[in-house]
Image (tube, rainbow, N blue to C red; front, side, top):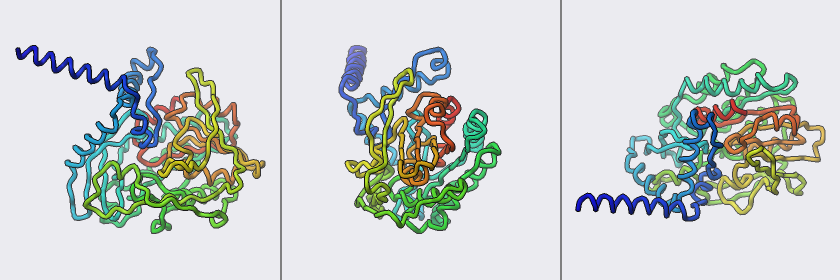
Length: 393
């Protein structure tokens, strides 16, 4: 009788699992994480023995679940129960996912009206990331200018009682920069943002910087490139109020005064003259264009900027024909920087290696960029699989 019960329970679990997979995927769950649905890697000897195929298959199964948001919410509740409250706020143990198919343990600090990611250094991974960036110095033509920008998060600029709960982000960024090839020019985003830390340069409830925060890094970059930076005062500022971001969904902030966000965006294309085209790619790296927009007015989250992430985004500014072309190897942090970059370039090509699976030689052959910028926020540099993706490009 006992064996029959066990077999019955097992059969019910299997049937439930199959049912969940056969139902339509819960697309809203991973779209809320500002990423696209995980895809299965090609099945071959390299992907099998490296573990890439297994990892991608597991991620695909997870994203294919019909009630993924329900399962995630149950997991969040369990994570919230593990949080503790020191004098400086509430620290919550959770996980970090940048959309590459792997997760890492992470702590969030709920304090000072914000939900903030707490950074932990990994000196070995700093070397790995620097080597991934140096890969482009070894492979790109000598006449291409290469830039690196690693962006800190808001906790780096909080009062010591808060920021000292994590490892020093400035030290970690400098450590990465010191390991870069001499031909790579570094952009000091930390130094550019620090004098403006009391301004609205980071969201309170999301892990991203704001378009204002990105502006200060853009202005610093233009000093390095020698190009003229646009004046933000020349553009109308618009607001989307009462926004709660991704980090807010990761924690229970009911016991704390968390400030809702406002999406502040600068109308850098008031006459709609910029040409924006997105591209997807098939297994043979053949592109398929589709119409896109720089500011997606149907979204009231960080996805307002470009609607989300895409394999490749092509931006053209015909008003600046002599501005040259820059290719940006990026994750979502670049989405609020791009509207500024296109003010100083004729073409801006955004390449997201988490989605784009082709080689960078295609980008070089298609666009012949004068400049290449590798831009990531500091947590992305801690993911070994992301570095592997960069090296494979």
